[in-house]
Length: 344
Image (cartoon, rainbow, N blue to C red; front, side, top):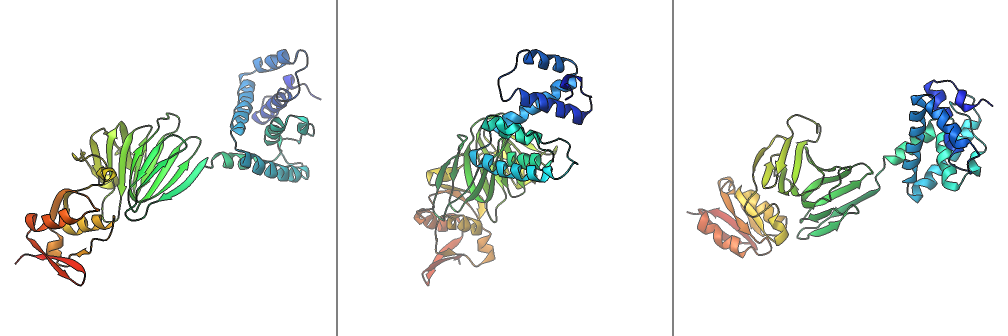
C-alpha cells in the first residue's frame, strides 16, 4: 500500500489521502509515532491541511444530526454502499474496515468514504432541513402566545396564521395572514426573517410587529432594536430600509417610513385596536377580524368617510355611540343588523 505521506497532490487524490488519515485518527488508539506521521504529512502541503480540515468540519456537522436523521442517513448510506460495490467508476473505494470503528465514527466514515456522491448529497440535503417546523393559527377573536425553541416569543393576534421554520444557520417565519408581535432572541449566527406578502423583514434580536391582512398594506413597527425591510424577491436590494425603535414602515416593499403611533406597535395585545384615518369600510373590516359587528354600510360615499380612534373590539358600544358624533351618519336598525347611512 502506498504511504499517504507520498501521495499525489490533485484535489481528488488529496481528499482521498486526507480521508485515509482522518479515518485512521477517528477510531482505534493511535500507533506509536502516528501523530508525528500525521503532522509530517500535513506540513508537506497547505492543501493537505485544508483537505483534512474539511473532513473534520464534516464530522462536526454530522455530530449535530438528530437521532431520526442518523437512522435515515444510515439507510441511505447502506443503499449507496450496495450500489457502489457494483461499479468501478466511483471516486473512492469502499473501506471494509470502517464498521469496526465506534458507531458514530463508523457512520461518519461511511459518509466520507462512500464511492458515489449520492450519500454526501443526501447528507447535505438533510443538513438543510429545518430542526423545528410548526404552524400556528388563531381563530377569530382568539390570541395566542408562542415560545419558540430558540427563546424567541410570538404573540399572534386574531385570525392569524404563521409558519415557523428554524434551521441550523437561519430562522424564518412566514405570515400569510394576520399580525404578530415578535420578541426575537438575539443570535448573530442565525438571522431571523419574517416573510409577509412581498416583504421580507430581517433581524438578529429585537421587538417589533408585522401586519399582513387582506385590504391593508404590509406594515412593520419597531419597539426595540433595528430591523431591515426589503422586497421578499430581492432582499439584498439597495432599496432596503433600516428601521429603528419608534419607526414604522407601511406599504410593503415600496412603502414609506413614519413614526409609530402613540398607542404602540401592537395595541391589540392590550385588547385595543387603533384606527388611524381609515375609511369606514376598512374600520368595520378590522372590527370583523375580532368578531361579528352586525354593522354594514352600503353607500360608497359613507363607506369612504374617514375615522380615527382607539377602541376595544370586544365592546363596540363606544364605537357605535361615537360614529354619529364624529361623522355625518346615523344608525338604522333593521333585520338584526345596523346599517350606517348618511345623515339627512
